[in-house]
Length: 174
Image (tube, rainbow, N blue to C red):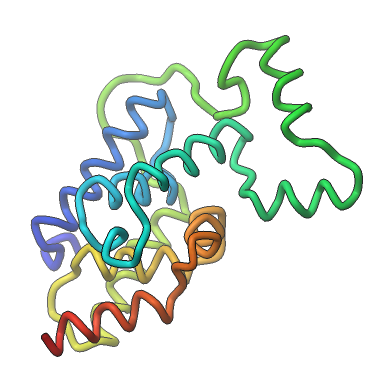
């Protein structure tokens, strides 16, 4: 499958490995892919989402152990103050205690099943739009289509499957 990836898409996957390594994560997950996508492509900025703002969103989600703003809002409806809980956990266990970082061997980090789904879905998305190559936009399409925190973060920024499809169609027509 990786032979179909453009240089840009390969840079995203390699970049996701680096992000996971920097976070001392044992695996590469969809949030790592999204972080790398924001760094290596212009697709998000073309959709009105500056990479630095998205990076802030992703840091906040990681700090809360993978909870999106939608999750936090839902829990607050039950009287649960997630930010207070995170602060208490960090007081006891140190900053970033919920981020999932753990010591791991250096080098390659395997993809989580969710990240594998994103890469597989990116191939299907590329085929659906008639492309022989997998580009960054196809990865973004997949991230919006595979349910999870990455899709939630994008949706909160107004980036959904339809918005990315429109972007692809505009680029193809232009």
